[in-house]
Image (cartoon, one colour):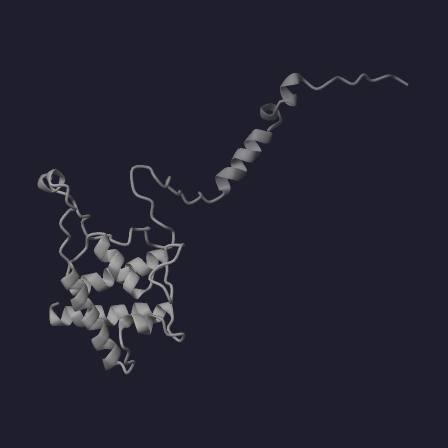
Length: 184
């Protein structure tokens, strides 16, 4: 029998390009639909949450209190940012949403606040005056009595065992709407 010699394949066929594998993969990838392009989150624009809203501070939409040169020279705090009673109530609700709600205390170690604590925090951060807070509290009392939930104060309503955080937000929202209707 004659002997046939096996010849080794040429080195060009041993490479991926020489075997046609690369061309086959490229053809397969070209047949797939193009992936949706997602931009980098911070490429020159603010990050937008995929759920549709961006995280904002509780006082968004209101300027921060700024000390004037005279305030700094006299070492006094900046003048408060003027807000209406309706804006004060909305800010208190946003503050509660941002830092959490507590019953039985004005605030706790975790930073959560009650209704009165939220109003005090809004005032302490420089939004409104004590007069604004008094007007807002009158609106809270009016809504409590008008909705059949008489209470000695909004704080007593806050501390009731049946009151939930959603109830406090609803109370603040209704009082803000009433204050807005009355131009307060």
